[in-house]
Length: 240
Ligand SMILES: C[S@@+](CC[C@H](N)C(=O)[O-])C[C@H]1O[C@@H](n2cnc3c(N)ncnc32)[C@H](O)[C@@H]1O
Ligand SMILES: Nc1nc2[nH]cc(C(=O)O)c2c(=O)[nH]1
Ligand code: SF4
Ligand SMILES: [Mg+2]
Image (cartoon, rainbow, N blue to C red):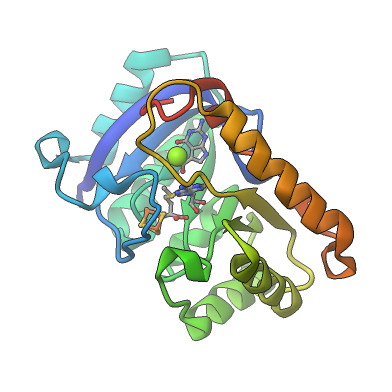
């Protein structure tokens, strides 16, 4: 069976972002990303700084570890990264194992790669990257993913764009226009993911800025603006 590159397994915690914010969930974080976002809050998944923590695990072993951490105390597993969509067969098998235990599966990915197992997921969050990240969106791939999900997907899929400034907001609007029937979440960016201590004041000021932008803009009547709730509570702490 194909193994998965895993850098963290943690929880239960509270999903802090997007469509299923507030839900109690475990997290499995895969290693490796095809992007290098300038402000990535999980750069240890790709920059080599945590390579000693990388493990190649059988799907069965990951399920065992989740159960050892919190058997009976969760109904949801969120798979993030890095980019979980870099992984093929092993991920499909892992999702099947979780479903056999009646556990809901949510995925966080940036929309740069398609995988057939997207159809199996319960909540697929696609987070294309705005200009401030330094990354370029491959619109053909993103179109392909959203077309497939619309036509064949069982999953509730949604879009989430992180916004740091005006240029990112314009990008978010272009995403919203292009996929007008898909719920779009806007999330203010955390511009210092290394700062120690309480960062909630700084994050709330960015949230207020984004609230005011959305309030003033008729092109954004149907977006939903949410903070990174876990970052308001636990700040830049890893594994939360
Ligand atoms: C670390 S990424 C991993 C999943 C996938 N690579 C992606 O980017 O969607 C998880 C989520 O965190 C968001 N994120 C990363 N760095 C952030 C930051 N500095 N401020 C706000 N959100 C951030 C990403 O946009 C994404 O929605
Ligand atoms: N609590 C919590 N919620 C999250 N939502 C998305 C996360 C991610 O890093 O993908 C994340 C995370 O790392 N922690
Ligand atoms: S795509 Fe996600 S994990 Fe990859 S660098 Fe960007 S924010 Fe980080
Ligand atoms: Mg995170």
